[in-house]
Length: 77
Image 1 (cartoon, helix red, strand yellow):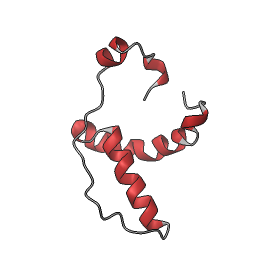
Image 2 (cartoon, rainbow, N blue to C red; image 1 turned 90 degrees about the vertical axis):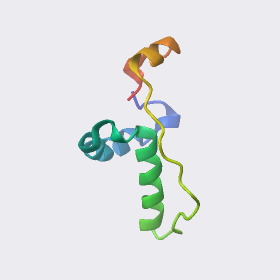
Image 3 (cartoon, rainbow, N blue to C red; image 1 turned 30 degrees about the vertical axis):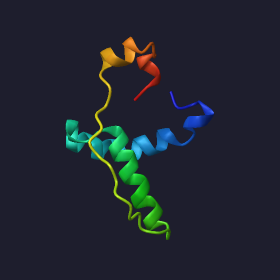
Image 4 (cartoon, rainbow, N blue to C red; image 1 turned 60 degrees about the vertical axis):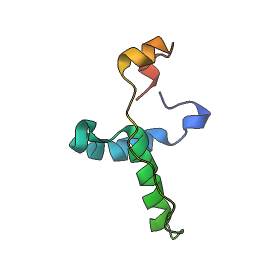
């Protein structure tokens, strides 16, 4: 699933974030969680605090939307 070069490291990130995602269930999308985690990681690595407004509220695509778009659900989160 994560063997595409553009997804290198995504499996590790998903593994670390999955317990948090599961604890909030549908209240946070993968896109929002990954964006938030990235901002926190930059700050904790000694980088600048992300001060521009973060935009949250995206929703994850449903299985029907994935199939309708012609994507293989087995290759997605």
